[in-house]
Image 1 (cartoon, rainbow, N blue to C red):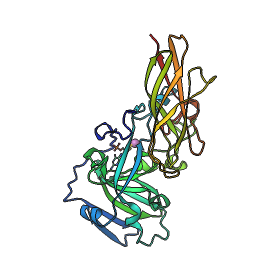
Image 2: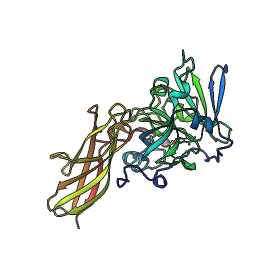
Image 3: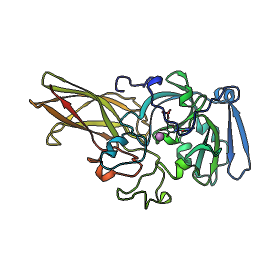
Image 4: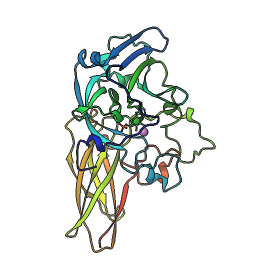
Length: 334
Ligand SMILES: Nc1nc2c(c(=O)[nH]1)N[C@H]1C(S)=C(S)[C@@H](COP(=O)(O)O)O[C@H]1N2
Ligand SMILES: [Mo]
């Protein structure tokens, strides 16, 4: 993963909750509606591509359950056992959601709901929503290009939402409908999933109405690769923070925190925080003594000086969301 600042499209993780639909460019339509049913406007694909300015933005998209497998080692979690692979970084090309919404009277609108062309067996679409402030920030894209290529089918062809800095689940693919509303999306994934809880909440007492939906994601980092060379442990990996924060430092230890070494941030965009949405690639060289097995930990620090928690135990939650404790790997020296 850490070889390419822009994750090649064919390596970018894919997460679908419902069967992926085939949407043709000719049939594609995006509806914009108010939830009082008053007004409805439809754009076709060429409207979106020609009537609005094309912009490009670098943003990572990360699933809310990335690194869940590590948290699962503490206590079993329901969910896909992602290691560190449920994230990718891309250059997205498209139109700003702001451009599409700016001429409407948005008085009283608090949430912008998104629906996809994909439907569950009950006929209801995939859905999610983001707060109106984020929608109007200029940092949410309706993307039709991914790394200078046409958006691939598995990533939402012909149009997907790129809600920069926000959990993957709100980055709706095969984008069909915008609903401007006082309320969050009523979809399962907005209301009954992708939320965090106290570590002692379990399936017998969880109340999804009590917890806000995850939007911006916390800071995380992962060691992707390691090698021992001449008494040095050579490492590389990625680090990312949601909410437009930039990664400012990566810290590593091989003795459970007695001594810390600093890695090097090799690649990141120069987008200023809080509009820094791409990940950072880093590498490090840590001196090691004669040990058979080395355990190395990493943690990143973001531009708000937020860092990662030390243990998964104290952030455990029943869906394994925001699983961002120190990444720890063991490296054998022989
Ligand atoms: N229409 C639609 N959009 C969707 C999903 C989906 O199932 N249907 N999955 C979401 C989730 S949970 C994630 S993590 C991201 C994954 O995006 P990717 O497959 O392009 O990596 O898409 C989001 N957008
Ligand atoms: Mo996800």
